[in-house]
Image (cartoon, rainbow, N blue to C red):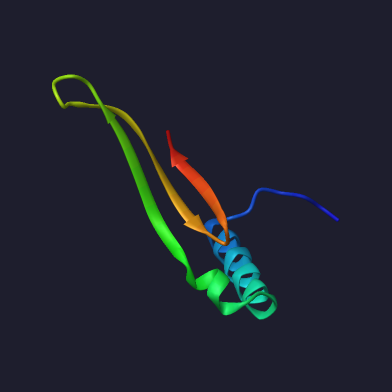
Length: 66
């Protein structure tokens, strides 16, 4: 076996195959429920000074940017 850096096409293939496999083995309600999340914090002037973006799915939260 040889481990090497994959291409974008490899990444897409792996992701699609894993999703297809998971959908065959989990309840439909679990993978249909997803949501994009965004929370911010502001200073006294109401200006955004930070935040977090994330997505929710498969009963977990994936933080994208903090």
